[in-house]
Length: 179
Image (cartoon, rainbow, N blue to C red; front, side, top):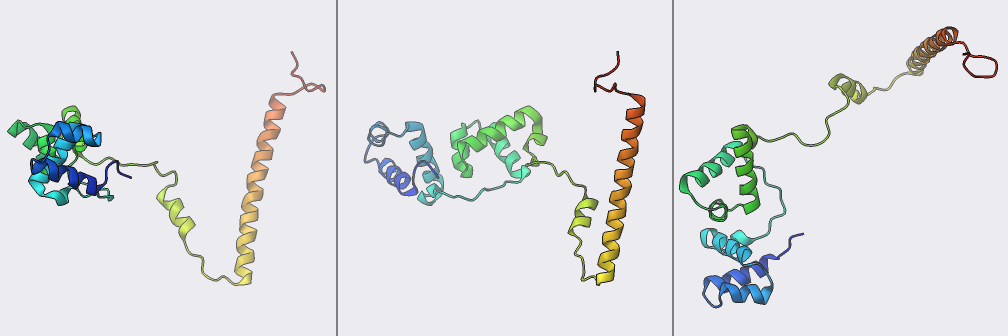
């Protein structure tokens, strides 16, 4: 949800750009900061009122485009507001790109992987996703026997380990360690 609707932005910009009211009057009338109104007006001047339309799709930009924006900022000695208006971007996006470029250079503009890293390896994932074809009853029983035998072997190994631990660290009949 956006803070200001498209119609409100267009109404304010059309009043400001047609010189019907001053920036200070619009600020008092609508309770919106003058820098915000000026940013909308700058964007509308460069790209028309349609540029004020609220979009809800997340746009991804290529690192080369980000670099062009950063270079444009440095070469033309313009403010963030003007650069954002020229490229029809938000001021915060331009500021983020400038900070990333200043901190890490071109590599700061490269896309970062998002989300939690996968815990399963590719092989395990492929094994789980393998579609099992219709097995005959005998094949199903054989598979079940093999799984149970593997489970039995694991349990026997666990039991053996517990026996060795118990032999190495004996307890007294009361359940306490001997001192």
